[in-house]
Image (cartoon, rainbow, N blue to C red; front, side, top):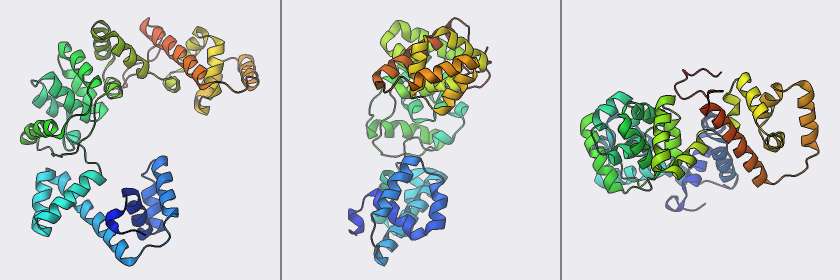
Length: 336
């Protein structure tokens, strides 16, 4: 096994889990994604032998990072650094903070994401739209959606557009904005060069706002940035989201779409989607669909994606004309 300095983050994580033993590692696995479990398990399987010195070094580094993370949660990076300097000296404290921000990917506005939306709104509502967009793009989607809903309507579309078109932001600019917020709501400051914003970011934010706010923003973007508005609409509701609709809405969709598109879409759909679609067909129609799907043979992924896009487009059309309602983030909408 190589020295600790040359180990990757995954290798260190594998050594940590090996050192903690199977019982503790099993509990940790419960909090990981399938992809993370797969990668870690592969890394663990490649470890032949771990020396006692290396194991001790990795455990010590993990312990230092855990302590630093706790200090950051209590009072921000500045507070954590001050405490760590007293305990380990300036050089070691800087090393621990650097490892923390790279290993655990501490993101900007860490503390702000735990604050109440109204509190953040009070501090940013009079800032430049680009500053507001930057802050919202780093918050949790639901939190950012609540804030966006409370901003003046004339600002909402502009901020949504800025989030969607935002690319990488330099640490210097992030730091300047964080310093202002830190003075006001004791938020943490990091120098992590991260990427936020983008179309998916604004989609997640819009999914957290009420239907009226969403419509106002999209209608404005339809005029100002039609291509951007169309791309956002495509991502607002995907084919697999059919499972959130009620039976009457699904029955209306089945009547609306072309059977061939539905067969193609169901060919690779999840069992949950297939079940809810077939449940809303007559028994004879469901049996016919299943038989025809069996005899379809292999299909091109591109054809499936195009068929699903046409169905999603039909669903959004039915929503726009008021024949169905898609429940939004607030949970107050009723599907009819």
